[in-house]
Structures are given as structure tokens and as C-alpha cells.
Length: 351
Length: 262
Image 1: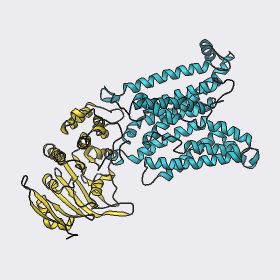
Image 2 (image 1 turned 90 degrees about the vertical axis):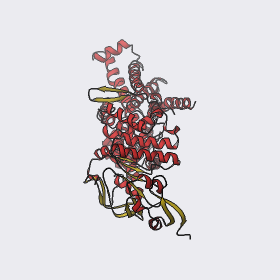
Image 3 (image 1 turned 60 degrees about the vertical axis):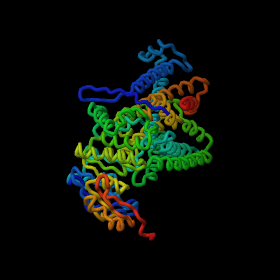
């Protein structure tokens, strides 16, 4: 793999940074692509709109299209973009800490934990097990997912901890716990009522169908708080790639830095999963795509987040329109879209 | 006393490696710790560099408890080069050396002209300026070791702990690294503590030798005082002749046979 030291110093008064022009270009380019996809998302659908119609519908509440754009398409597209960004950022952090490109929020027990609680909630609140419905149905699916995601991560973390946190151990424990969760999920799906499990399956695949402003706000808030914090942690994250002794010698509190960054990753993934279900592959592929396009040694956080947003938004556009009026779960399209591109990038790097 | 271990007990898991050890490092000296494999010398060095927390006792840096000080502040005065350090893949020499500036940087001051100057100087001192843009993986063992030392130098600390800085190096490169250490000591007045396996080189390049066995300090003092035939038997279980090094005049060990197999 090639790495470039293509960074230029940027110094203003006593302040100084190293800026990677390629990273800036990819981030800006990604944001432009995202804007384009969002605009397309506003226009396309059962009710095709021209660009002028979209603009009018956005600002004029009296036209009938206002509801379509402002209550249906915009919140859904925003949820997709924000969830994609959050998952990708989470994946970038986890891959850096585990020093493993295959690590993702799934490894941390977040998505599988969320799946188990949601399936349990949906199945148990159904007709077959009517008795236990109260608590589960009151919490609602997003709260259930958030709870399950955080609990799953806590279990993995507790099992992986042994006088410190080792990336390799974390991945192994994570795979084991994910396998257990996945089997519990399948067991619940087999014992559940067919109608309930059908609903649960849509959520498990990751869907943006019917997402409204109530889904945009939590992810938006989480990103607003966590993105600046993780960017501040970038330097520690970079340093954590070295051996523990080397990093400690450099004055980094290894376990604290690792725990804080992992916590941020867990929160991002849990909030994203609560909003849209475990959308597959974004957290795994977006950081690796960004890393290869920017040509650096480890997933660049900001570029990864933008890549994730583009991937999720693009995937949702296809999921919504390709087989209209049938909608695909977005999680299926992200994998179909992201996998070939990632394979292409890896293939190209071989020569 | 720059750095001091006061009654430290060190271990991993259930195993105690060093029990109640005292050692003081004077400012401006080169101290070399010697001893057989498993005697606890690397463990002691890790504790001195706050990479390992003592079970008992304390390590004092300039008279203050090292684990009570912010680790970042420690990193500005104390550099440690661990044994067999690992770097991420695909790094260039310049990337590695620049990492040494970490304790001096903040998110708003990530690459000052001070940083740039310190890195350039460190590369210069280790003779790596021409290799700066080369990937670390492509270097020879000796060059790679110099790159790591260069990183520790870029950290700009006047106290340096080096754990076996000459392992994997041929004799010429070993001497080269130790000459560099001597220069750092003589020209910049740095205080250096290292762990070395080669006794003859240790005697030649150290002001003070510390001989360890079984987690205890058996002898400490000038190479002439420490490196005796009696000590070779007691510490290394080796029957040996100690003569004067014809070049430097320091003690030189000529092994005869291990004591256990007469």
C-alpha cells in the first residue's frame, strides 16, 4: 500500500497545522457530491419534481408539494446522510484502535446488541407473547435499539478488558459476542409470530423508510457534539497506532485515550442504529474507501464521515427509486454499492 | 539525583520480577544496566520510564513521584525507546521521527517551526537526512534502529532511556549507535540510561555500570569496579578473564566456560 507524506504546513501566528491537500479535496468533493445527491433525492420519487418545484416547495408552505419535500423526502434524506456519516466515523475510529481494517461497530457489539433487543421487543410485544408487551412497546424501537447497542458494547468491553485494552483481544471477543447475539436474534425470529418477525426483519436490514424529523434530530445532535470531540482526539488516535510502550513514552494516557475514542464510536453507532437500524457495510467500507482515496495510512476521520454520508444517501436514492413503487431496505443497497467499489480500490492497489 | 527508584517492587501478573530495588541516576551520566536474561533489567528500565507501574515503592523524577506527574510533562523531559518498538505499516522515516514531537504539540499547534527544526536536527544527528522520505519497512535493521533513536531525539528530552538499542545490529552499527549515545552525552550533556547485552561495549561507553541478578542490584559503580572476574562468576555464572581493552583501557571480558558445566 502506498502512503504519501503529502501534507503541507499551515502556520498562522503561533498556530500551526499540517494539512493534507488530498484530504481537503476529497472532503470538499464529497460534500459537493452529497449536495447533488440530496438535490436528486428531493426531485425523484412517486411525485417527480423539477428543481424549481423543489425550491418553491421548500419555502412556500401553501403548495401541496411542501409536505412531500419538507415532511417526507428531506428528513428521510437527512437521516440517511447523518446516519451514514455517524456509522462511517464510528467505523474509522474502531478500525484505527483495533489496528484492523475489518473492525466495525458490529465487532463492538453495538449493532448486534441493538438487533437483539429490537427483535426481542417486537416479537415479545406481539400477539403470541402479549403478556410482556407493556415495557417494550412503551420504549419504542429507537430507545430499545439505543439501549441494546450500549449494553452490547458494555458486554464486549468488559469481556475484552484485562489490565488494559488490546485491539486484537477486542476484535476476537467482539466476534464471539456478535455470534452469540446473532444466534439469539435468529432464535427469537424463529419463535416469533410471522407478522412480528416480518416487521423486525425490515428493521434489521436497515431501512430509512418513513424516517421523519424525530429521527434527524437525535443523530444530528449526536454528530454535532461528537464530531468536534473526535476531531480533537485525532492526534491521540494517530499516536495509538504505535505500540503501547512507545505511545506511553510520548506522553499519551493510552487506556484513557482508547476508552474515550471507543466511547465516542459506540455512541455514534448506537444513535445511528437507533434511527435507521443496522445499515450494513457503511461503517466497514466508508473508512476504507476514504483511506484509499485520500491515500493515507489510517482512516481519515472527516473524509470517512463524508464518504459514509455519500454512500448512505446514494444507496437510499437507489433503494427508493430503482424498483419503484417497491422500496428496498437501504442496508441491502449500501452493500451492493459499496462492496464492488471497495474491491475495485483494493484491486487497483495491487498493481 | 535525576531519576531514582526507591524500594520498587515490579512484576507482571502474579510474578514478581524485582523486589524492593533502590537505584539512583545522577544527572549528566551514562548508566548501563547489565545482567543475564530474565534478571529484570528491562523491567527496571520500563519502571524508570513510567511504562510499568511499581507494585510497591516509587520512582522519582527530579525528586517528584513520576506517576503523580502529568504523563505529558514527563514526556517533555524523559524519552524512552522501548525494546523492539512497533510502528504502523507504511510509515516513512520522517513520519516516525516527527511523531517524537507529540508531547510538544496541541490541536492548535500541530507542526510549528520548532517541531520542524527538531526533526531535521534529529535526522541529521543520526545520519538519516537522506533517507527521510523512505518507507521504514525498506530500511536495514541498523537504519531502522537509528530511525527510532532519531524519534527519541526529536522528543528533545535531556533524559533518555534506551532498552537494548543495539539489538539486531552488526558490530559496526552497534559501535555507531553507541558513539551517537556518547556524543549526546558529551556534547548535549544528556543523562542516559541503557540496557545492553554486550559487556565490553557496555564497559567502554558507560560512566557507570549496574549489574543485576534475580531482580537485585549486585554491584554498581565504574566499569573498573563492577566488571571483575568475581562478578562474572556471581552474576553471569561464567568463568572469564577480565583484561584491559587494548583500545579504550576499559575492562574487557574474555569468556572461558560456564560455571554450571565445568
